[in-house]
Length: 244
Image: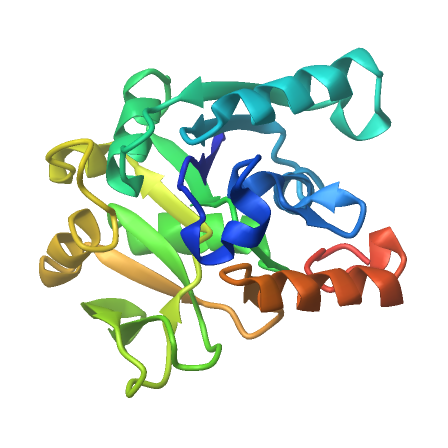
């Protein structure tokens, strides 16, 4: 199953780091966060990646090529392609562009700025069992992200970010069927305000509840927190890796 990594945003909330590189290339310790994300999947048997790039896509492409040329062990068994999906394209548009060029009926996808020790195989099985168009991973961080109303694992409402809301939020780590493209109208449509609310209203968006580690890298403070974790742990023992 192919893994789509959404890696095209401007990263304006962490502009201290993104003047010269896209957000997924911001380093967490010695490695870009996109490396950590790919390792989350690869350690669980998913090796085929499509990076949906946009802002400074060349930086990601050059890094991948450099790692491949250097025969780095981590990349030797991975298949990675970098697809330029447009400077101003939103998450829905990036997903649709990638799916339209790929074979297969189901795909994994996630944001290029968040890490978690999600059991990907259990997530995939959950999605298959529920037989819906899309499944997201729901997590419980501080209430500063988009709010989800969930009933019996089904997303009933996909809401905007609201400091007053508490509870489950969208943590990325999706499983999606090809049919999601029918709900993405244009490149200018975010998943979060386009396809997902429509799918939720129709009972076609499920939530896989994750109780383990999860953190996004929205701000410089988040980046520094993640970096501090890498200083306190051996690489293979980082809390966002399931296999430890």
